[in-house]
Structures are given as C-alpha cells and as structure tokens.
Image (cartoon, rainbow over all chains, first blue to last red):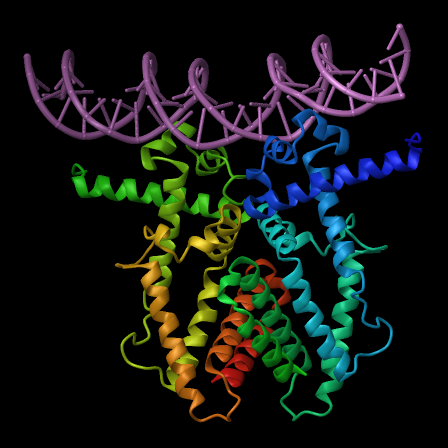
Length: 210
Length: 210
DNA sequence: TAACTTTGACCGACCGTTCAATCAAAAAAA
DNA sequence: TTTTTTTGATTGAACGGTCGGTCAAAGTTA
C-alpha cells in the first residue's frame, strides 16, 4: 500500500465527521437537542466521548454543522429562477419540489422544528442573529427573502386575472400556511399520509393556488 | 376581623397555585420545559424553591396542571353540537371560534408546541398515553376525535354538492393543514399578522372551505 | 523510539427534589 | 386578657444524579 497523501487523510477525517453527524442527526431529530447527550451519540457512532471533541469543538458546533450540511444538500438543485418571474408551470414545479424536499429529508426537518421550539430559534432562524446558517454560499436569511419575493410576485401577477376581492397578500399567506401545516403534520405524523393522500394533497394545493 | 373558614384558606392556597401557574406558563412558553428551572419560576413568583413543592409535587405535575387548566378554560363555551351535524353557518362560526381561541391563548399554545416538540408528545398528545389530559370532563383524545368526526361529516356532506373530482378527505386534510400552519405562524410570529390580515385570513379560509 | 490517536475517569456546574429548622399566627389554656 | 401550645407555611442548605467538556495515560502506528 502506498502511503496516504494529506488529502486522503483529510478524506478519512471527513468521512468520520459525516458518520458522527448522521448519528447525531438521528438522535437530535428524535429526542431534541437537550435530551440527546454527547455520550449517546459517541456510543452509537462507535467511538468514545472524548474523541467527539477531536471532530467538533462543542455540542453546539456539531448541531450547526448538521444544519449547514443539510441546508446545502437540500437546496442544491433547488433553484427556481431568482431573478426572472415564475410561470404557472414553474410554480407547479416549485410546489412539487417543496413536497419532495419534505419527503426526502423528514429527519432533518424534524430536527429543525424540535431545535427551533427548544431554543426560540424559530423567531430568529430567519433574522440577523442566525446569519451563520448558509444555503450554499448565501445566508439563509437572504435565500428565504428571495423565495418570499418570488412567491409574492407570482400571486400579485395572478391577481391581475382574478376578481376584484382577490388579495394577493392574503392568498400568499393562505398558501404558505397550508404548506407549513402540511409540513408539520407530515414530518411528525407521516402515518397520516399514505402515499395516496400525499399526492392528492399536492394536486389539490396546485389546483387551489396555481 | 372574624377568623377565616377552611374554605377561605383553601381559596388562598388556590390563588397562590394560580399565581405560580401563571409565572410558570410564561417561562415554559418562552423557553420550553427543560430550559425553565424550578428556581426561575420560584424567584419570579416571589417564593423559595422549596415552597414550590408544597403546591406541586413535581415539575411535571406543575406542567400538567397548567395544561389541564388551560384546556378547560379554552374549551369552555367551545361546544358545537357534537351529536348533530354542522350547518354552513355553524361551520363558519366554528372557524371563527378557533381563530379567537388562538388569538386569546397564544401563550398557552406556544407552550403546547414547545413542550410537544421537546418531548415527542406531539405524536402522543392524542394517543392513549396522554389520557391524563382532560377537556372539562372528557379525555382530550375523545374530544379531538369528536371534533374530527364532525369536520369529516361536514366535508363529506359538502362533497355531494361538488363536482366529481372533489375528495372530502383531501379537502379535510387541506383545511386542517391550513389551520395548523396558520396557528404555527401566528403563535410564534404574530407580528406577521397585523389585525387586517388576521381577519382577511379568516374570511379567506371561510370562503375557500365553507 | 517517536508521533499520533483514542479512551474513559474525572471535574465543575447545574438541576430537581428533600428535609431539618424557623417563625408568625392561630388555637387553646390559664 | 395574657400566656402557652400547636400548626403549617416558608426557607435554603444539602443530596443524588446528569451532562458537557478536559486531560493524563494507554494504545497504535510508523
């Protein structure tokens, strides 16, 4: 065997970090931040408690690493035109992508909700204080703001074709609340959503708001 | 001054318990269950840590007492016919009552969400394990099931007047998710809902689902 | 041997809970 | 009324336990 280059060492180290993060994600999302101990994570990752601190400086840093990794993973390839405006087809595609995102990253979203609720981060997640969270190379806050703007534009444009008492802002609020409520239920009680109703809900949402 | 009767003593004790519960509700709903210490609550209630245990046997019991009290308060006068079926007017009234409930008990609902998320109670809140929670004289589980049935009936009956691809279950899911999402946003970020949009949202919901 | 990884005993801080001690006021006795 | 006894609300030190984080030492590799 040839000696390993520094890069290969770095690769092994990153693999181990990833393993720890996966285990931690599982525990954090099931039991929340406080209830998960460093010891539990270490045991389940097959290493000692002390060694954890070779990879992450603190429990907090471990959490932040998980969140940033997942955010980047999730939003990679999740980039509807941010400059241009949404067409109806793009809007439909957007909804379907959002639902896929929930389906494929339920564990991560459970963590987000649990941690948010435990530490009042919900109010701060999109505010200035949480500027440490990055979506790729963009602060989460800016990313979200862009998404919001995109949606708002869509509903305003849509308003021009609707009747007089149509209010784009209200429509936007209704839409995002339905999404949020769906996310909450699906993430924490997915047994309420057999595939049939999962898809029917997506279709119904598109029909109602497109 | 005449000596106090036993009932008056009992009244004083109940007042003190209520005071403690109010303080605890504030802290639990702001910081969650784990992050709130008995000491904090005691300090803010103006008593010593030890005295807390004359009024409540444990932190858990204090939490349960708060939840039960609020549930009873909230659902008093919140009794749409549980046997009969909902008319359209009753449905509209129901929605408005639900929103009033959120508006008037935001602190309590914040506690519910926080505690649910911290301890996995979300999945269990309506299950057998949580049979200790009572709505008046009815287990919370049964109360919720009744509500669900009432709603489902309404959407099924409504379905008979709609077009062929109307699915009552999907409609029901959409409706309850919109409610849930609204609740979540309003409870944790009410600044996003100036009164104007609060009311507009209610109207929009009624228009969409009545 | 030298350089490193890994371990787990250990530390200090904290938290829910207990309990012996205190004391003001109510009740009983004088 | 005055004095003594009893009560029970109240306190805070102390306890047992947990947890995040540290570090000397054992193990491993080269």
